[in-house]
Image (cartoon, rainbow, N blue to C red; front, side, top):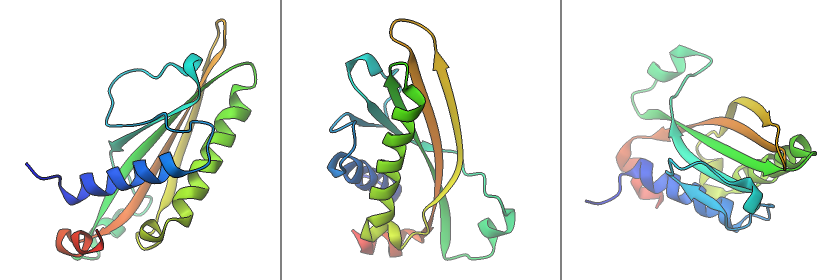
Length: 144
């Protein structure tokens, strides 16, 4: 079965993140349900997510586009986990904002959530929820 245009878009985002200059390097995983082990190095997990727009009208005011939600799950370790997660997220965010395709899709950061777990080493995670405005399937497919 061929990948849907949404899956193609998520794969594109993964490649943008792999190619970006982040501390995760090539430790970017798409669609994984496994826990990240930040003791092996900083990592990013990319998954499709619920779309919860700030303005519900945005979802319905244009029949020619859809909203796609996705989540970046950043994982780091060390006492400075918050700083490391923020740096990782900032580098990922900049890479996505500079991508030509994503520039066309109104990329928006809609929520973040940070958690830390004590241990040796301390483990930190930052969840970042994004949405993009995606044209109809035919229009999006023409972008690839």
